[in-house]
Image (cartoon, rainbow, N blue to C red):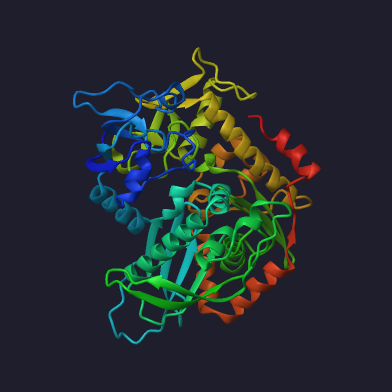
Length: 511
């Protein structure tokens, strides 16, 4: 992982225990995009200790990196697959936490529209808006009188140890009540820490949006019904809930009352409703109707016209955010975030300006578009190289399996856009939002067929649409009532078992 500072962590494990389990037991965060199934390579790291040997399937996930021990005896391993062959100590090279934290703080500062920590007792009435995303959690401190954002915070969702997508987390909750409780505790601790970081006063009103699974886990509601037909959640919310949060820094607990806006269905949450509300009220999508796509692990797509919302949720999976991709990583220092062609050669943009060690979702989409332009990738999705892979940089490549995962994910999102946009004129704006969706290149999305070419020139980007909508709901009773109406009156298109979706999905898989 060139260019990235690391720290060597010492852990103790029992025979048969996996390294990721030992790390978590030692209080370390481990990113497991596939939920520990050993198929994505996202948890690879260098390890030394009394471990079982890696098999061919594990080595295939090393992204071309050397599987042999280095001069210090450290060997590349998947943390979820490497197991202790005997009781003993092992040493793991993990990204340096201080270095990673500095990057996260800089990223937050760059993306916040305004950061100004309030002075205690300045007389303003303040509230907190939170958007719990599957991958990231964002929060802001809001002046309730003006609706202005006062401060901003952003963190990775700590539930990622149970999988990169909502389906993985539902499965984890179904398999173990302990896992469900752990996910609830993790997200509550995360939100509590962000409230502390924002210096919100005790008793400040809180609004929390998110997809239905994330809100259910936050509220302590069973999510397993969402994972089986007919996919009806136990709670769609639209009400205030009382939750117990751990007190960051000082210890102990505190109760807060948080308003959770209404969701539309098990897979179309209040985050998407909040994005629609913000796009409508901010004028970001013009004065008339618009299309909206929150492109991520659970791609929520919608059309809004004449006060009516038509909604669908695309089962995209984690590939569009780098999950399940051989060299895939979440956005962060060392991730290839953009790919272009200059003078016939590839040009990479790497987060943090260091040597690349992986590729995030925006980079993957750009890379596929460039591969098409260079003739390396065919319209049928085949990589035209002898080994079926395309190298972007040392240790970072795109494989045939990666293209297959991208094809499935973008086919699902494209089909959902097509179904929700039936009858909508071509010149209507297409709003791309979400921490991931708003960072995309419309040209690359159209080139690979993720969005229709005829709508690419009308694409509008709205960063933090869900959080901005949550801020409106927090500061305005009228906005809260409108969000409730939008969700309650929405026409939801269930894609599971839909012949129209299957037909459009198959037609959208090619490049």
